[in-house]
Length: 170
Image (tube, rainbow, N blue to C red; front, side, top):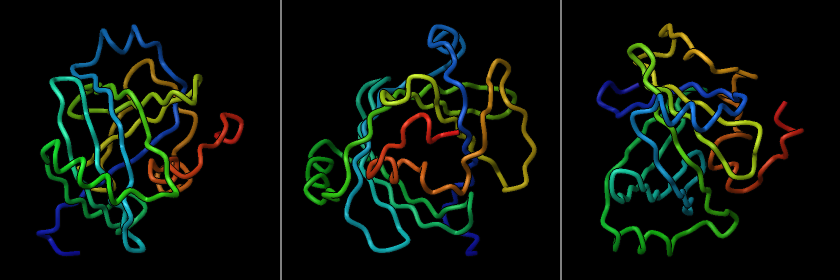
């Protein structure tokens, strides 16, 4: 790998959906997000995101897989006008993903917990790591059902195409 590439090293987990009140009391940041996937070449995902929380922000992101938990990630903040322009390149086979993201600090890491409106009992928790084998501990009060890292069926890009039922998650 090229050392100058902007890498995202991330592990993902299916968790039992914690209490929203508990998370609100423990989280430093909470965002409402909309992610729309764009037409992109094979082995690459491209999306735009609208994020509301500390104001409204817009982002354009391109990701290229390197390993199960490492991707090259190029992300930039964009204007609302650029966001609208990108939406014209939407992948017609996808739906916009809406979620609430809770940013939970635990030790040196921030765990991002995504609540989706289509799964009342489960959520997805992500952690970005400095390297693939970096040790970490799950935050207290979080019940991990299973690891999703590398399971493409549960990436946001895949969820934009097909949302598995809760029965299919476990």
